[in-house]
Image (cartoon, rainbow, N blue to C red; front, top):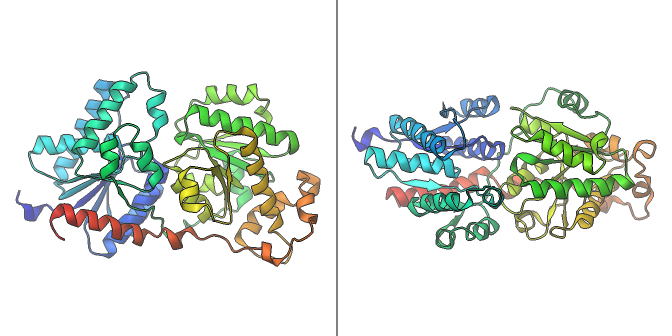
Amino acid sequence: MSDTDRHEIIQVIGNPSPPAEEEIAALAMVFRQWAWDVRVLAPMTRPLRRQLAAARVHAQEAPEQSGESIIARWHNARSLADSLAAARPVLIHAHDFRAGLGALVNRSAVGEEVPVVLSPHFRPGRIIEDPRAGLRRRGYRWVLSRADAIVVETETQRAQLAQIDPRAAERAEIVPYGISAGRPEETLDLGRRRQILGITPSAAVVGCVVDSMHVDEVRLFLDAAAEVCMQYPSLEFALLGSDVDRARYHNLAHERGLMGATVFVDPGERFIRALSSLNVLVTPQRGWPTGMLALQALKENVGVVGFEGSELQEILADAPRVALAEPGSVSSLASAIIRRLHEAAEQMAPDVQEPEAAAVSPFLVSRESYDLGEAWDRPGRTSEKRRKPHDPTREFSATRAARALISVYDRLLGNG
């Protein structure tokens, strides 16, 4: 097949990842508007397939993963490489290390220099808790050294990448997060959404996404939750995740006396529905996917709490619905959660019609249920406190991110 027969840019996701899905779908839509041929090869969920179909982007189901052993990982990479070989892309953008390995195996097998762009979506905790950390680190370095370009969304991610490969971190390019301006159509009200997910409809809910967290970060969240519960026992804490060790987290919550206040939520293919059911999202992670989770939450009018020194501070420190805590401090995290709840309550008033008000005020300003009345009665609660919702799509538009990516693609393809 000649080069003229090869025309598609393929976006590849190796591991299921709602944050990556959101970003890739938004970028693919922009690429199509600019007349680029794009295919997405990923573990397909219904929301992702629906978004891609609306943008007329070809969606292809990624081969099913067969395990986590070294042999299984190699088999998975070969299966992914076979799918890529059949598509004959002109460029591959791999959105995690598993996808990157498959892309490089494909290039070796077909004997053609297909450029590979790698977005590592790297989480140091995965290496820390892996008994084969040394082998995994060498595997990551192998993929990083052979990728034609490496892109990360923040300087924080670059610093984390330097922990395993300083040279790769030096050549990594910053391409900002990109999020679509539209919101998925939701036919259910907040109470019904919570009922479906197993969350108390009338509760004020603080949650985290445990799929993307190291167990030490989960412990930190639950320690802070226990401290918050001492002051506000009617709050509810939600652990969102599909691929989690529920028994392990059940024990962690039980040890802290939180079983009655903790809800385990499997969002399935409705991640945004689950996220939008929270009042506050806590993101203890330092790097990816903290920024994307925060952007998704803010887009759904959900407050965000994270740590100083994280990419949350790097890109969203001044956002009205963001509160920051001291790194690793349980008491500071608990105070930041309470501060975010109180700030939300302060911004509510019967004559203020904000998106957050409809979702939060029934749960945060009710003295009878949650005893947050002191925030309601505090002097100085004037209109200057009633800030407009932060719109993350203004600063982190998919168009801006796509423009930066296309400059990388053009360079590798010799178009610029």
